[in-house]
Length: 460
Picture 1 (cartoon, rainbow, N blue to C red):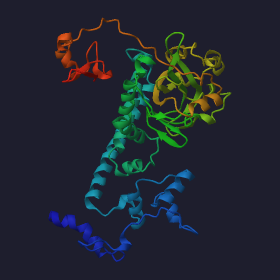
Picture 2: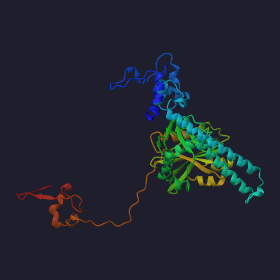
Picture 3: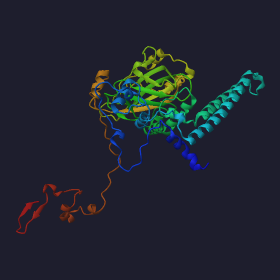
Picture 4: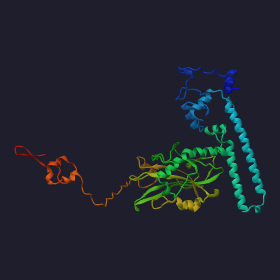
């Protein structure tokens, strides 16, 4: 069979089917009005068709807003949802394309090979566990190293078994991936490292987070910031009334398992007038927060204070006259998932509200053995709502304005040079009216007397 017949066979089979939908003929004119997608922005009156509020088929802006408010956001792009709505709902795995189906057969065979390799590695791990530790050259430590290496290799084989599956990629792009599976965590990490992580690393360098707060830092978690249902890009300058309420975080780890984390919000740009410098202030501190790849959402306002919160949330503010403040948000992993003593954290950092108390994230990390893993930030500056926010939060200093002290140069004044410097003597008095930057007399106030032809005179 020729290649042309092989390519045309799925189309011919499709045309011979009795239940096939009629194809729109090719034309150079505009499509009919019934075939054009019309956007309806206002909610229609009366009863609404359930198809309009289905996350897979909602195409109108009012329906998308209702789905977002209900907590079930629409899936995929609007173009994809409209295509699903107007198609015959053929399953993705049964699309009538020969090349697609042949490729799926090859991928299925490759997946079977990877599964067989996984079974062989699991059997190898079983034999190593059952063997005596004295048979290994390094003893128990060497055996654990071999087991750990085999576990990592098995995880890599699991990813390679599904990395090319189009159904896996489709579910991931639609936001339906199960983060319990290693393939979806791998795809999410690859997407984050392709763009979002580069932005965070740029902000860390741009705003001098290192070494102002930590000597070195490399983010490992995807941390997204939300204020009042709005997503905030890293480093954005926000009004004071927006940041008055605690934020919401979406922390996405990319390794399996549950863990406990500590959340810290600090301001490293607090002016200290007495010391003529800046100090750091802790705006929020909470510990023993459970986190997993399948449960990334975290609302700081809903955490119980008695069990987690050591320092309650202090709204972000900047005094009048001070430069913008960097509000850095750090996510720190607790060692081996062990809980921290929240009462001890309160005794150490609860009174850390004045410029005289310099909060140190490095000291907190070293005292409790924490590991910084996630980061984001926003900025705050003085605006028309800052005074009211400070008053409601009970923070003094809203009526104080900071003004920089001008430092005079200690260098001696430089002598004048050029054409004007050479012609400032009385010999060139008649040229002074044509110059501006001269030393001595000036004709701007009419000090030079002009002589008239009759011998009289008048001031310039």
